Image (cartoon, rainbow, N blue to C red; front, side, top):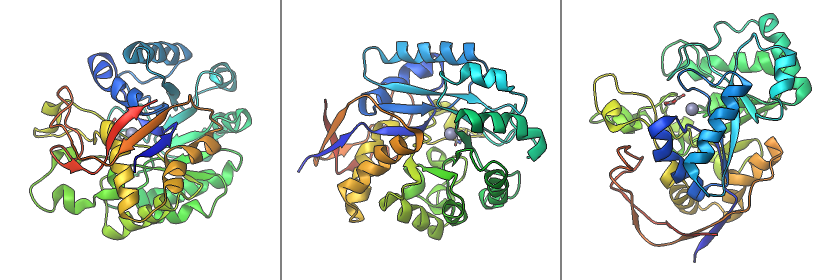
Length: 336
Ligand code: DOR
Ligand code: ZN
């Protein structure tokens, strides 16, 4: 039986710029109705002009595909209320990176002093602009996300009207935090629902599975699966699909990022089916929850997935995808 998904949304996506943008954007635009586009370009997306120009480059790259790039700004504590009012209609969220924590995040936040952050976060609360956070400290790599949970809690407590999205959560500690604060939400990637650190480094090192945050323990993956398969109303699918050219992954100093965008819906469908989760839950996880949380009205799109074997290509124009060479159960049959 074919499966139909309506208006799938990817609430955390890296589309890059220039040549890479033109290679990867059409792949997401084919199967998704829209995506929240990350701002960690070089230089980062920091002004209204940057947002509008980047958006028009994305629209150019996708041609006539029906796809909405939901734009983000790179958070700066110095953003004034006037500035935030001026960008309010052009952005869907603002993304906060701790300084230097991942790819192109050097200009991010150092220290999380509430009073320093207050003017910008109060203004965002008043304007209803959600804050997306890459929640990792500079600690030991396996503990970085769990160590960040108290910072999430501090921000959620001091700014109770601010919608805070814990991006790409990978730990049971983050899952547990979700239900402690009304204003905490989360995105979950496909790869963190499937792999643990064992798949990355337990045998031969797998550069195409290396990402930030690094995949964690089996009990963490199980906690993520539990809320994703149940479509917990505070979690949404965000692929964190992060393309790098093959030569930047297969080298010493491998760049962080897993490229999942072109196979995400096929593999999510298989994952939900294999785990006995219903199509309604899958639909909520890949669209409904994000619509509610972000108040989105995505462009109509129906993605029909047929139960026919699909072998994941070795690369998409020089970018190696997750599960390359593996045969999946579902293929994208038609997009209406
Ligand atoms: O693995 C990652 N890659 N994690 C991030 O947070 C950033 C991303 C990228 O931009 O390459
Ligand atoms: Zn990301």
